Length: 378
Image 1 (cartoon, rainbow, N blue to C red):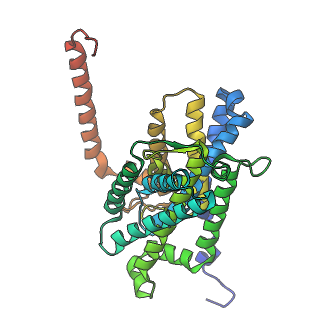
Image 2 (cartoon, one colour; image 1 turned 30 degrees about the vertical axis):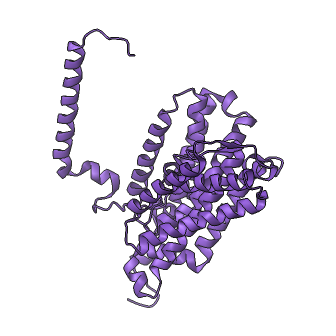
Image 3 (tube, rainbow, N blue to C red; image 1 turned 45 degrees about the vertical axis):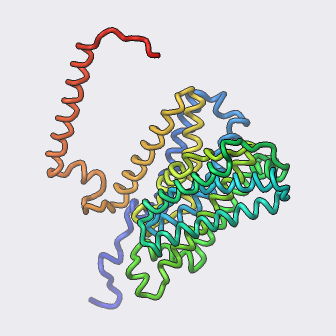
């Protein structure tokens, strides 16, 4: 082959899928956001698109932005943190007691809350890296510990009415169109994007998630960087606790019970891989906006609160399946979701599913036919 000739492989143009692959994590949730907007424009345009409702969507999303940014780093390193709701609640409770019971100034109490969040993140990291407790079990256990401490401190009290600085952080209006918490959330997202894409810590995070053993062999202190990620996560959870306290102008030990599920859902929907090595701060931002818009749409349509969990779970499954199919990175080696569904070896599984559904339907019919009179409860 002459010097002027090139192989067909080098001349081959990338396919549409290959060109879109770097942006899939952002395109996926954005496509669903557009679908929600179109649906609500048809069904309930007057209520959904009024300024006060759009402002509420941004306020709801802003609360999760700092945590979603930090959780992106944790999950990219093949970790998980289920304690962030308790960290937020305990940080908020401690800040509230310092202000209400001990007369601390609001700025000092808020900084102490952030430091406490960092300390709790450090404890999580040490439990995982030094005691070798798996991330899932370790952070779940620490979630119980932190929540229990918050309950002991609060003793059932609801602390309310905080200084203007705290309420400004939670629901103030920094700019004409953007509330203060939205500005704070976007700033944390920008910081996260810069750290992920422009610093050694961001590159090490992706490297550790891709191959921890190889990263260790190249001289990266894997355990130390994992601890850093959990400290970062704890600090952002504490910031969310401060924002929640300001938003409600109140805090109690049982606050923020579903923070972990909402934040993990947003990050996963945004394209960050639960298997590590792939991260997207922009995708996490889009995921936070998507979930807030979806939940707000369910409220606007007067759908029961409990269906929000159903919708969130369905969005997570759909998103993960979509990314698997588009990027063909299914861990079983098949060609994504389509390959999994068309695999001949799945026929026995399909038959089992059919049998289970048939038995369930039969039992429901028998139960309905043999049902007696309904007695009033109580």
